[in-house]
Length: 312
Image 1 (tube, rainbow, N blue to C red):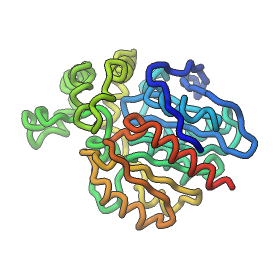
Image 2 (cartoon, rainbow, N blue to C red):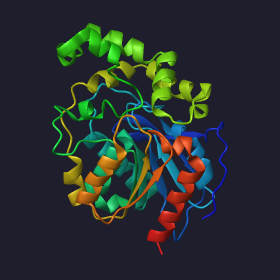
Image 3 (tube, rainbow, N blue to C red):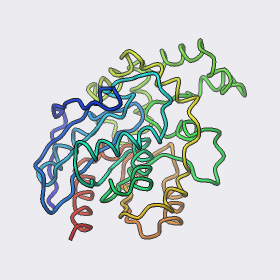
Image 4 (cartoon, helix red, strand yellow):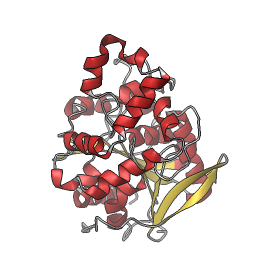
C-alpha cells in the first residue's frame, strides 16, 4: 500500500444511527472491498471521529473506512448512564452487525483501544483484526480501584491535574465524588486553554496542536449531558483486565506505539502485551499519545499494509 498524504482540515460528513434509543454519530468513506475487510476507527477519551480525519482521508482510497463517536462523546448522545468498557463493547459490536454488516478490523486509540480490545476478545464474530494505538486499560498486576482511574493518566483530558492533586491531597478520590468538586473540575478541564496545555504534554510534534484540534475536543464538552459522562468516569465499575482479554483474543493484533507518550511507559507496556499475546506485530513511532494524528501518513501505511498482509 502506498502512503497517502492526508488533508488535515476537512472532516468527512457523517450520519446518525439509533442505538438503544440514542443517536450515535459515525462517518463512512471509501468503497466496500470484496477482498479487504472494512476498518472501524475508535477514538480516545474526550475525542471523536474528528480525531481520525487525517486517517479517514488517507485510508479510504484502499478500504471502506468507518469511524464512530462512542456514546457519551463527540456528536453522539450523552445520556446519563453508567459508562464502561462493556457498554462501548456492545455499542461497537452492534454497529458492526447492523451498519457495517461484516467483520471489521477495529483500530482504537487510548480508551478507544480498550473498547476495541473488549470487542475483539469478547465478541470475536465482529473482529477480523485489532489495531491498538497507545491503548489504555489495566493489567492484573496493577491495583486501580476502577477502570477509569487506571485510564486517568492515559486519556486526552487530564482529569486530575497536578495542581488539583496538590490542593486536595490524599482525599482526592473522595473529594472528586462530591457534586460541587465534580462541577468545578469539569468547568476547568473543558476550557480550551486547559485542553491545549494537556495536548502540549502528550503530543511530541507541537505543530499538530492546531486551533481546530482544540475546538474539536472542547466543543462536545459543552453539550447537554457532557458533565454526566465526565462524572461517570469516577464511578464506573472496574472493567476486565487487559491480560484476561488478551487470553481470549483470537484475531491478529497490531500494536502501534507513540513511544514519546508521557502517560505510559510504552516499552514496558509492550512487554506485558507480548507476554500474553506473543504473536502480535508492533512498531514504535516517534510520536506521543496519539500517533495517528501526529504521524498520519506513517500510521496509515503501517495499518494498511498490515491489514493487507493478514487478508492474503
